[in-house]
Image (tube, rainbow, N blue to C red; front, side, top):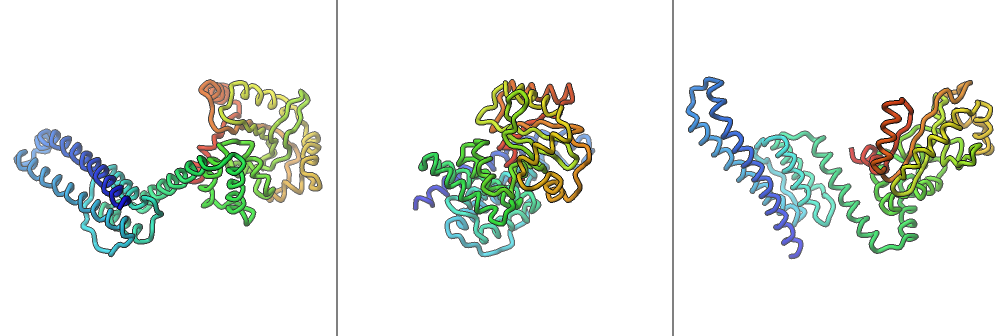
Length: 356
């Protein structure tokens, strides 16, 4: 009974929103009709066209009402008798809004069953919306459900309990020693559980050395150093090499990235720029233990290690977010001075690898 009341409230709210969009579009068309008739030299009275438009708007509103009634029925019974829904194209943005509202109704407190997906597909066909557009809407619905579930979970668990759950999810999504693109969506849940702590996330990555941290943040790199000590007693979180032999400095920072982290990263870069090929081999061999750099490089990139290393280098700062000042500095250095420095935010990792 409670669920039925909730569905009815959602239906009334959403239906009102869609009908208001239709009315706004209708009013706009009403205002444009006189000029359109004049410019096109149509031999049809403006009043007649306006009456036809009003009639079409009424039919659209009635059709929308019927669709919402069906959605509530399918949501409450989890059953749909397939039928041919009358073709009724709406303006593109309105069609997507309507499908989004229907999906919210169908996913209240439960996942989308096959019957519900069949219903959405029939509505999609009636509206003339592409399957890809609907798939994106469904992905967003799934994302919101996972996020809400994790938010509720965070309120119930202590920090170490949340980290334990994160470990279990992490182990599950790459039990085969790799992270499939379809599994990236679960990384958002993990990040919520560890409160977007980059260092905690790095610890999770270490649970399986075959799935290195750079691959998770979308970088195809081989890590050759961790907490690498510079000649100035600094500690580089991760030092990596790409397939061209360029070095990459990766700095991981908790919470908001303070302004001075940019200066720290630049300081590390000044040291990395001076590294010779021989010194790079020494650093790598210390990190890789019983595997020489040449072998590790060949296994990673399926190519021979370049003879001369560190022709160029890049800087990457990984954080949950940037403060405005740091963001301006990074953009200035990159755009005005051509420095290869950029930032990666966990929320963008998810958006790029999981949702789109």
